[in-house]
Amino acid sequence: MKKVAGFTLIELVVVIIILGLLAIVALPKFINIKQDAQVSTLQGTGGAFAAGIKLANVKWAAEGNSGPVDNLQVYDGGQAGQLDINLWGWPAQNYPPFESSPRLNNTNDCMSVWRTVLQDAPTVSTSIDVADSDYRVSYISPDQCQFFFNELPALSIYYDSRDGSVITDSDPTT
Image 1 (cartoon, rainbow, N blue to C red):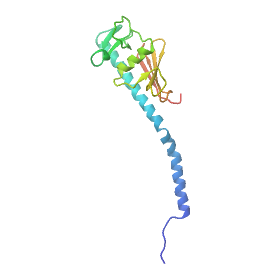
Image 2: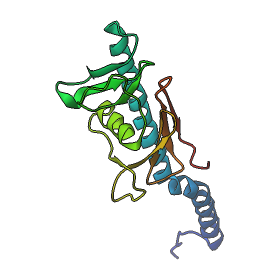
Image 3: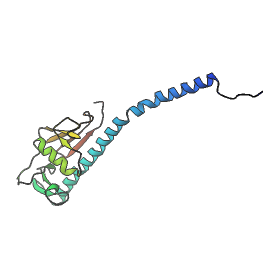
Image 4: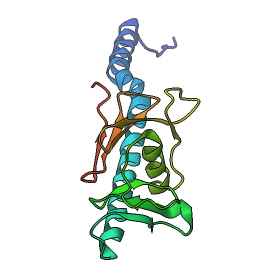
């Protein structure tokens, strides 16, 4: 007589239960992968933006400035790399015409600082539509901007041109 080897019904049920438990534990991790990627994207962009803002301030200080400066060449060559620095020494806008005391005072100023500081910057506009841009800008009076991540609007990057602070809000639950 030949003995047939195989799994018993009990063994199969135990294996299925173990696989089910593993799936229950692991599934939430896989569900949040997209959100985790969005948070990481925002954190990377926020870090790069903060570094660019600080670099512009260092360039302003290294040249011996102590007040507003118009068209300071911070990055590359030409108008694309110029920033207008406000009276506190922080980027306020990027516009070629002379301005004696530049201030960050509207959404266009916010977008111009974003595009200048971040080379190959994620797209920014005033639209909440993901098809239009990666980030939506909002001007906060006085001299402040907030950039909301359109894919997950609870995520944002805040910039205050009065003290150069950049705060990345990467908590999707707020």
